[in-house]
Image (tube, rainbow, N blue to C red; front, side, top):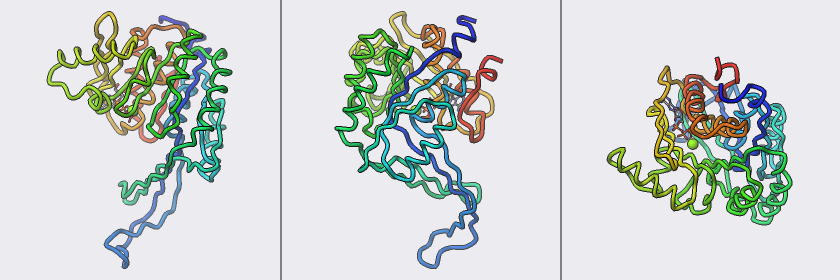
Length: 309
Ligand SMILES: Nc1ncnc2c1ncn2[C@@H]1O[C@H](COP(=O)(O)OP(=O)(O)OP(=O)(O)O)[C@@H](O)[C@H]1O
Ligand SMILES: [Mg+2]
C-alpha cells in the first residue's frame, strides 16, 4: 500500500456544508382515500439517517478516520434528531443554529416496497450565522489535514470562496462536491467532484471523450483547480489534471442502491489525501469504495476492512 493503515486512521477531515435528515416512513397500503384518488398509507415504521454533508462525514468515520462537521441547522425537531444521529457516529459536530431556519429534511413515504412520495422541507440559512462560521472554520483549520466542502445547494456554503482562501493560506488540500451552475466560487480548490449531470450543467453536453477532455481541462484551467474528478456512475470515474487524464472503470457488481455513492467517493478521496496520497493514487481506491456502496441496501458507508480486503 502507498500509505500505512495508521496514516489512514489518523487522517483528519474537516467537512463543511449542507446537512440534511433523511427520513423514511414505511407503511401498509390497503385502500384508496375517499378524499382524493391517492393511496392511504398507515405508517408502522420510521427510520432516520444522516444526509448530505452529515453522510459524507459519516463515511469518513466509518473508514476509521476522523471527521469534524461544520454546518448550520435550525432549532427544530429535525435538527435535534440529526444532532443525536451525528453524536452516535463519532463525528465531531460544530453546528451553528439559525432559529429561523427549517432544517433540511427529505421525507420518503414507502408503501408496498416502493417510494410513493418524497417531501422536502428546506429554506436558506441567514447570512449572519453563516458568516460567523468563517471564524470557527479558521479556528478548526490547523487541527485538520484536509478540507471537504459538500455543497448540496441549500445555501450553507455562501462563504466558500473565503474559506478556500483561508485553507489555501494554511496549505490544506481542498476537495469540493459542487452544485449549481456557477463554479467560480470554487476557484483555487484542489479538486471538484461533479457527477455527469452536474458537470453538464456547467460545460454543456459532450459527444465524445475527446470533447469531454477538452471541456474538462478548460474548466479546470479557468477555475485554477489542480484537478477535476468526474464521477460517471456505471462508467466509473475520470480524473483530469495537469498530467492529462486518468480513467478507472466502475467495479460493476450487483447494484442495489446508487444514492450516496458520490458522498462515499469524495469522503474516501479526502481521507486518503489527508493520509498523504496523491489524487491519482487515491482514485482507484475511491472508485472501489463507490462500487462497494452501490452494492449495499440501506447502509451507505464502507469500512476500512471492506475497502482494503
Ligand atoms: N451503477 C453503478 N455501477 C457501478 N458503480 C457505480 C454505479 N453508480 C455509481 N457507481 C460508483 O460510484 C461512483 C459515484 O457515483 P455517481 O457518479 O453516480 O455519483 P453521484 O451522482 O454524485 O451520487 P450521489 O449524488 O447519489 O451520491 C461512481 O464513480 C462509481 O465508482
Ligand atoms: Mg453527488
